[in-house]
Length: 161
Image 1 (tube, rainbow, N blue to C red):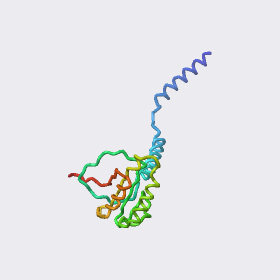
Image 2: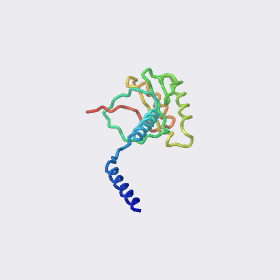
Image 3: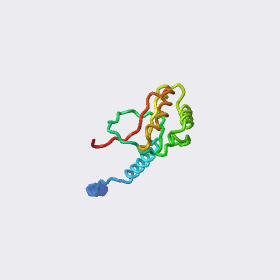
Image 4: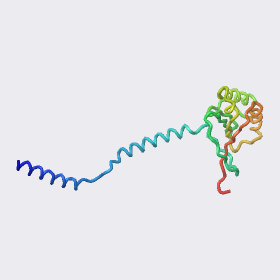
């Protein structure tokens, strides 16, 4: 029995010494893994957030109103060469041609959900800064005559003015 007491005391003495030598370290590998996964998710989501064609928009002095983005609200883009695009499809022709405008209107009617009047009356138009508004006016008149009452124009805000 005496030998077992000596052993247990020896073990407890060794345990106390080993506890004093224990250092707390943080394993950063899972942190790096999670960070990379989050980075990939944000990169993929940010690509999907961008809607419509990439158009160089005009600059304005008017402060932007805070508006909630509506996922169902279509985006019509008018490129520098006056070509009309719905979302990312440029298959309608130039904004100066009536046939292109009527084709665009037909495509808009198909893209809007049936029975949702609130969404059907909203539209965002992104016009390249070099396209004159007199070329876009027939499109605006056609949309207004069809019942679109909320037209949002995409612009960049001038900074420092």
